[in-house]
Image (cartoon, rainbow, N blue to C red; front, side, top):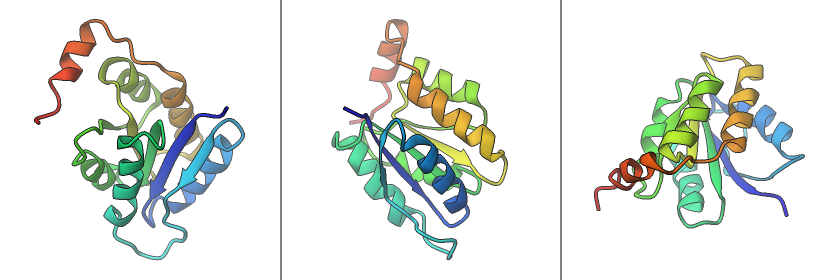
Amino acid sequence: MKRKIAIAADHAGYEYKEIVKNYLSEKFEVQDFGTFSTNSVDYPDFVHPAATSVENGENELGILICGSGNGVQITANKHQKIRCALCWMPEIAVLARQHNDANMISMPARFISKEVAIEIAEKFLSTEFEGGRHQNRVDKIAVC
């Protein structure tokens, strides 16, 4: 059975979302939460449903893309059970999974190449949380 992954973007991340989604669709079941064009949109309208799907277990992990990666990351991290890391290079995605048990990542479409976006997604989805000394820290992240 294929792992289930959520993906969402705003208008600035739409093109990258489509590229990453199409690439990952061979190995994963990818649920696309939008946006579905380059028309200007409000990213929270797409990020909140994607984050909720990860939070409630409908999807195992999630990938978010916008121009800077910041807006979508901030929005996702408003969800109590989400740990979304801004990743602009593959090594950050690896560390986000290994050390922080990140269950979502955001990528800055205006600052990385399409090839790097795919590599970041691959590293994020193929890296496991190390646990151990990191588990205690992750347990202290949530406020309530």
